Length: 256
Ligand SMILES: Cc1cc2nc3c(=O)[nH]c(=O)nc-3n(C[C@H](O)[C@H](O)[C@H](O)COP(=O)(O)OP(=O)(O)OC[C@H]3O[C@@H](n4cnc5c(N)ncnc54)[C@H](O)[C@@H]3O)c2cc1C
Image 1 (cartoon, protein in one colour):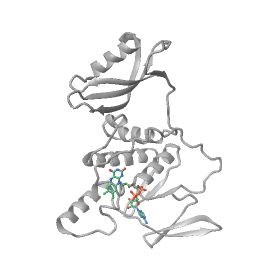
Image 2 (cartoon, rainbow, N blue to C red):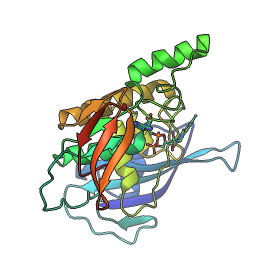
Image 3 (cartoon, protein in one colour):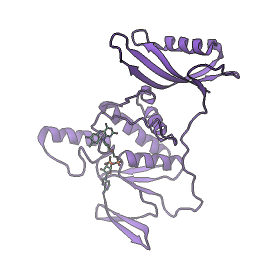
Image 4 (cartoon, helix red, strand yellow):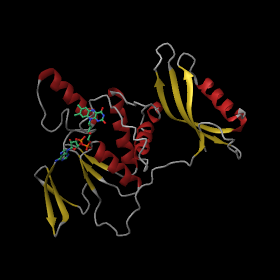
């Protein structure tokens, strides 16, 4: 795969066709030779106010073999993917339990569910649809639900923000890539994969959270809302049970 850096296009002329044209010109090839073009980064060069550019970095996969002819800003790269940790060999006596369905809990649940662990996610607040109604009621009336509010509930603390994202482009484990690809898969716009200051948007974020939940359920995960962790039972430095809502105990040997 070839990576082309520093493709500059005047913002007034920018379009997918112009970008493709620039790529073909740079590599001195025809359209027929291209298998896939993937935008890796898109930023703005506005140093000169009268001449503002979009600056692209793109990955190009070609159909046949291609020899780089010492082209400036063109390098050969390997496809980078997030590799999930290896699965252990010992059989678990109970399903893993995750406390909280903020970003941390949701992604832990997704990775475990994708590997077939069927995690149980407990959340003190409501599912995002009900949480939105409760928060809107709070803004109108001042009646506060201590368990489900702007801070607590499915989606976690930033659910009512505009969802600014960290690109983590320098992370050699590609964790940022996995997160952003998951968001796109769950309904976020695909531009977040390459924009230099990506964000999801408040209204969209809710839909993304709902779809992420559905994905986890599809893989075998389960969610319990209005369910608060209230106590733990630990024996010989190992977790044995958790108490929920001061009323019921659940067995588990894995707690996140
Ligand atoms: C107003 C605001 C705007 C933000 N905007 C952004 C942004 O644009 N971009 C960005 O990257 N970050 C933003 N953040 C920060 C971001 O929200 C946090 O970094 C992130 O939510 C942390 O995720 P987490 O899963 O670790 O914790 P949390 O999101 O806090 O999730 C914890 C979850 O656990 C639940 N919980 C807590 N205790 C219990 C219990 N005893 N039993 C069961 N469930 C429990 C809570 O209800 C909650 O859902 C913002 C934060 C706030 C407050």
